[in-house]
Length: 63
Image 1 (cartoon, one colour):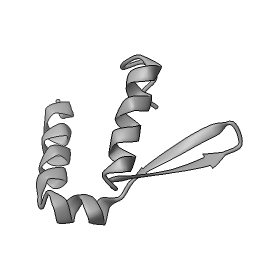
Image 2 (image 1 turned 90 degrees about the vertical axis):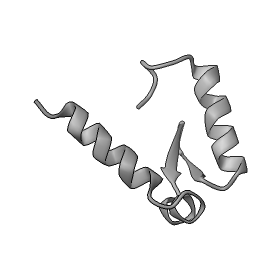
Image 3 (image 1 turned 60 degrees about the vertical axis):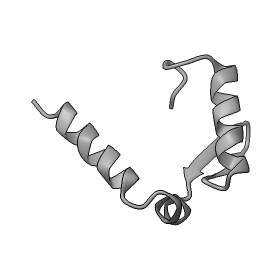
Image 4 (image 1 turned 180 degrees about the vertical axis):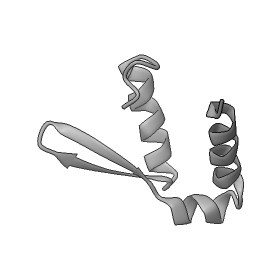
């Protein structure tokens, strides 16, 4: 969940942009909306970027 990071309206806009360019898939489940990154589409558009980001994030979180 990202609710503590930024305003709800900002997240809604971000998710809308990502859906519109085909990088995010959203589905409703009851009162919740679930978002899923379309990893294959992301990797096709930005080869290696997500792997680099995740690797850097893991390294920065390590003691």
